[in-house]
Length: 295
Image 1 (cartoon, rainbow, N blue to C red):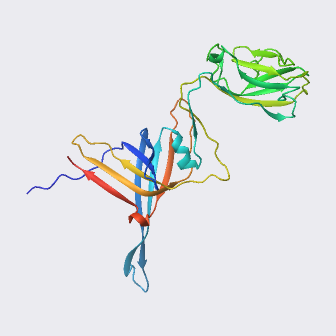
Image 2 (image 1 turned 180 degrees about the vertical axis):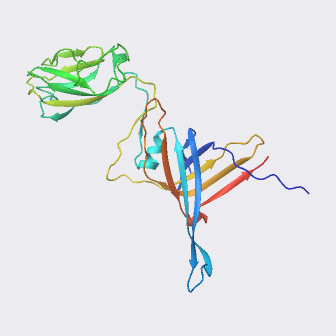
């Protein structure tokens, strides 16, 4: 009788994460650079006397680490690795302009004597450009507007900065009182003045954010909150299916990870490398299960 073919593992296909309580899946990593499960054990030698070698050796503590390198940033990842669930945002046919927030003084965002609101201008929603915006009072009735980045300035009408301070308004815009409306040309924005006479304080500042028209798939997440916590989860690592039909799967019952490095390199896809620890699940009698099949 000849020897059987050796069982071998080739490549990686996916890593799926699941809720340890309900066993429902959180999501799947498919854009993987690598995934490795490293199981190490310490050795505890008994030494003494003149012997150059141990008298006995027993196995010590063991560790299991799941190292992941991936190139996708789906919403569920932030919950498992940073401790905060992301908010998925449905399609917005008119985009989204956040509420103004005063950051210097209180005169810019004021429903009576300042700007009552900034919103998407009807019919100009396609001009909305993704960025953070700063509104600065330059007189009692006029403002300048600045943007955080020109990455999206090609959306709609092509725009550019006016100076090195990132100003986008060629000249100060007038804020009209008694609910008057002022357009921000080529940015899809409409400024509505307060209900009374406008009385801005020079150099007061407010900020807002813009999300352009989209068909879904947007998300937001605020990380680093004091109440954020990193959940334990289960993981299923699937090797690439071999040409002869062989499949190998490693399931880890109880896993915890912390941290999510996000790289921004010149003309490269962002890649995150995360190391998770696998540890004992008393209810299931171990740290995990390996499965192999050869049709």
